[in-house]
Length: 392
Image (cartoon, rainbow, N blue to C red):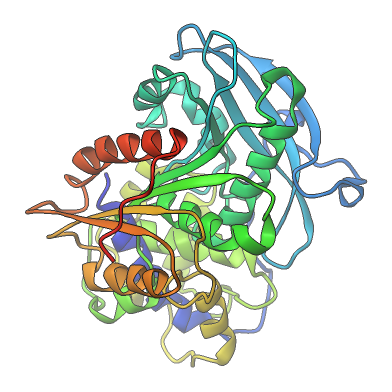
């Protein structure tokens, strides 16, 4: 499962090259709306400030014994700085007193609204759910944002960073939790690390008031476009994820990316088939398809495509995190290690303390476990006020 993101990014980078500049016909295909009215923005969402709570509710704490769980609807911004409502799930362990807050961004590779963490945390769809109890056992509160946003814009990493930061603001502004003075840590792996990484680099300008004391991220695809260079048009069992990422980016940039003029009949069928799917169904529907099967050739690239990729690539985005960073990566990871190292080196040069750990012999799937254990210890030390280690 955890090798999915590299293939999805590489396929999508190639297919979006074919899409750039295509005139819109019917436009982006959006997911079926959530039947729960809690998820819908009020007409005056623009009157709220980013991070302001629009509504809240208690939900059953299935899988998190002894914890109290709220869901918060809050104002955030889309990739064009327009107002949106997003949702975060806030899990607070029992006991009183001040406690740290960790915003954990799951790797959500899906297009349907029912796949969002606020649903998948409780219905078995989110594989990381049980591991969150390790954080609760330390007395930490956890915010888990639906970082793909209100249209499940899979691949729009900058959007994910903004939603993450505004979700933290909402958690700290929610009186029942008493988190107003809590130090904050960020964590995520793979696709979740893309949102985590963007939250870290955006925070100095977007949310400078947040007391982010440490960031832990692993297996980060820092430049999806470069991943594509090493991948051709061969059939692959995870092709559907790349196609899904194209759908997600079209949702977030509907006036700049259009699939309609490039899709073959098989492409239209695949888009319709997975437009509301979670990850397993996406993989099954797209298995071993190729770009030439679902797209007509001949679409040229244009500067808009590169701008969109640069906006969503941590390697290119000029911002740097100011909070100390722990980053880990498998030595045999399918996500390029050299690009991750280069990006971390840029952060080092800007003065950010970075501890970069390479997990010997590990690929994208096997690196998550040893790195995650070290990430918990790293954040614990930051919450304790210890000086951050660095191997810059």
